[in-house]
Amino acid sequence: MNKLNTLLSHFHSDHSLGLCLGGGGALGFAHLGVLQALEEHKIAPQQISGSSMGAIIGALYAAGYSASEIMIMIRYEKLYKISYLMNFPPTFLKSGLSTHNILRNFIKEVIPHNSFEKLNRKLHVCVVNLNQSKWEIIQSGNELDKWVAASASIPGIFESIKNGESHYIDGGVLNNMPAQCLSNSCKTIIGVDVLPKITATEFRKPIDTLIYSIRAVQHQNAEDGRSKCQFIIEPKGVEVFHEFNFDAYLSIYNKGYEAANQYIEIHPDILKLSVSPHSELK
Picture 1 (spheres, rainbow, N blue to C red):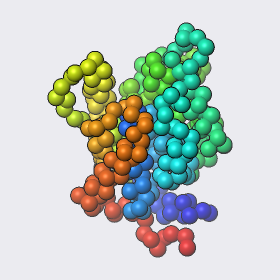
Picture 2: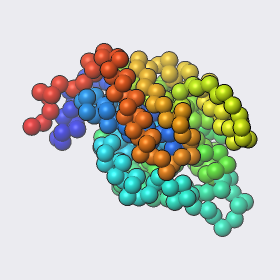
Picture 3: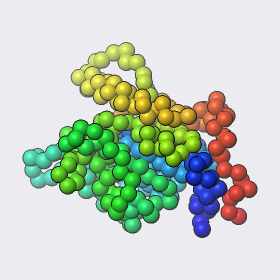
C-alpha cells in the first residue's frame, strides 16, 4: 500500500472528505494553488467532484498526482496555451470550432488505465446532456478521457461529445459546483469556487457583457452545490483575470494558494480534517 492510500485509509467511509472543484476556464488553475495549500496542511480528500476545468484538475488529482506535479505537466505540455489546446477540424460544419483530441490524448497519456474505478480517489465528473437538458454525474467506466473532455466542452468552442444518441457539453452550463453527488457519501465537503460573485462596475466592451452574463447564470446554478459545502474557498483571480487568460496560469495558481491559506487562517476548524502526522508511512 502506498503512502497516499495509507493516508486515505485512516478515514472511515462515513467520515469521507469530499472536494468540489468548480468550473471557470483558466481561472481553474487556482484549484492547484488550493490543492497545494491543502496538501501542506495534510488535508487529503478521498472523493472529488468537478465541472469543466474542475473536472480536468480533479481527474489528475484523483489519479494520484500532486498539485506540484500537475503544475509541471501544465508547463511541460504547454497546457497554458489556448492555441495549443485547440485543434481545428478541416471543416467548420461541426458542433464546435475545435475537437478535444489534445486533451483526450493527454489524459490517456498520463492516466493510461483510463478508468474511473482505478483512480486513487473516487471521481465524479459533471456533464450536461443537451438532448435531455439536464446535468448528469459520470463516475464509472473505462472512458475517463471522454467524460473529462465532455465536462470541459465549452459550447461553440469545443465539439460536443456524443455518447449513444445524446450529446454532452460543459458541466458548468447547468451545474458549476456539483457537490450534490458528494453529500450522501461525505461527512464534510470543501468547495472551491473560482467564480465567486463579484459586482461589475463598468461594461466597456461587448465581451464584458457576455462574460458577466455567463457568470450570472453560473452563479445561479452553483447555489445548490455551494449549499452542500461546509467550507468554501473563493480564489480572487477573477478580479484580475478572465476565463481565457491561460497564459497567466502561474499568477492564477498563486491566487488559489493565497486564498486557501487565508481561509485556513480565518477558519481554523478546517484543520480538524487534517490527517495526523503519526498516520503517515515512514
